[in-house]
Length: 263
Ligand code: HEM
Image 1 (cartoon, rainbow, N blue to C red):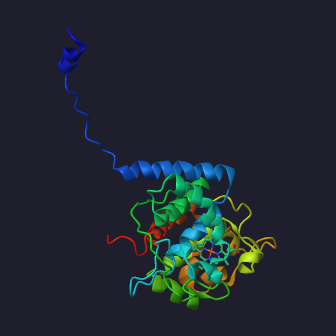
Image 2 (image 1 turned 90 degrees about the vertical axis):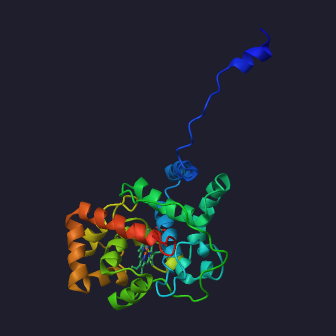
Image 3 (image 1 turned 45 degrees about the horizontal axis):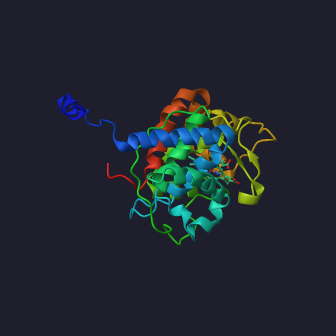
């Protein structure tokens, strides 16, 4: 029997159709790379801020802005509200270089949801498929909220994005992570005692009659206590972390998809 004949008698092997869509393994590979980054560099808070500032330019009335990585471009990148976010973008460049198939817009949003999970927070559902903008969203500065203002201003800005009072309140709970930096925003210090852990401590702290002198409270944080409905939500989240996480998941997923998917 010649080797050639042996080969021709080998049964034909039918490989099963590939069941996992390619983006599923891409997403899981990028998640692994992000968790590795966070193990060595606990930069989760600035990633959450990056994703929020990229998405938060959205204007529901005309569909401009949103989670499209336009924050990489001037003049948006240079807006005062985005001071320091170049650090987050630079930290993500090696991951983009390793996985060029992921869009920047997906990478920024995934970095945020993985950062929240890495910090002990809830798992926010994530969909891949955002398209990168080729330029800055808008030359108009001021689409993001001002920390010195109160509820009227927050409503104006968040309603423009299509977000409501519950979403304003619950998303502000992301200040459980990270801190303000004098050289970026002019404010200084963390909101909570353990700013690398995502929990409901932000609400516990802002409700204390005697503020902890080491912790930060922006006017925009205290704004949540301005009206009975949002104050009641703060109390609910301070008393019930599960209620906070349940509402946070919904609001964060919505924020992370502003302007991106038709359904
Ligand atoms: C940090 C303002 C809402 C996530 C900051 C800082 C300011 C600020 C002034 C400090 C930046 C710095 O100096 O490094 C506001 C205002 C908001 C708001 C006025 C209106 C409600 C949000 C939302 C999220 C968020 C909706 C996310 C869902 C963060 C995080 C940090 C931060 C994680 C810490 C960043 C770090 O540690 O580098 N925010 N924010 N913020 N913000 Fe907000």
